[in-house]
Image (cartoon, rainbow, N blue to C red; front, side, top):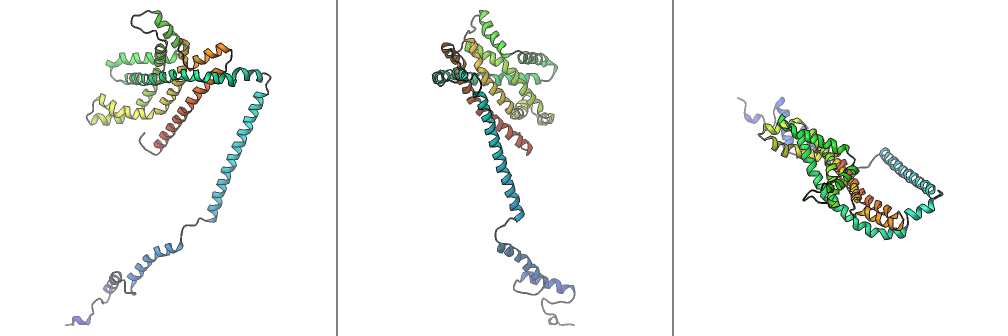
Length: 335
């Protein structure tokens, strides 16, 4: 028999020799022979080589491309500013060079009458803001009820659907000014017991009646935009129709129609000034009183600028919400 000492430990002929050497090389870093050590040394050297290279340095082509983009951006900004300046200058020269400019400035842009009218206009503006808050809430509630009534299914709900359709069709087609005149002057003429004759309440009622029809259609569009599979999934989980509408459909629908709802709110904020035709002293009527007393129309300009100052932030907020909603929808997020 061959003695075991004839074959030293770790050495063998054939394929076993290569495997053993490779294993020994991987297990013992001190050995510098064998393919295993070479492979490990190769892998270990890579991080050191990257660490020696230092921070990333962009190529000359990339630096040139970024410099070109910055130059184009500065050039476009300069052209836009110059174009805006030239356009504004042309408009100013056109207006101030007209034959009746002096008389127009005294009648519509008098600083004296503007200072006189501003406190009264701001005092009347409080009424417009109260109308906006109360009427806006009533419009949202009534519009949502109308939208839900229009989307009810089943023949038993046909009368509700028919009434909701008739309401929205009538008040969307009726001009707001006519609705105000009919409510403000028609309701007191009936001499009904317990019915108010306050022009502010009657004017607010007319605003609610008109804007509820528009908001109802916005809500209905949001409800119908929810995919039918959402209802089917909720029903398969055991939710009733009412709970499906409340917990599944309406939350998605309301989130989708927030931008158009804000647009309607901006319109409502402007149209609160129409209650002045009923005799309510709001910002517009306060300006009308001063203008009629002094035969100067500067108070109307002041009232208009006050409404614009209120509308612009709301409009920018609406644009921001719209952009945010579209971005989330494009990224696949919850809308």
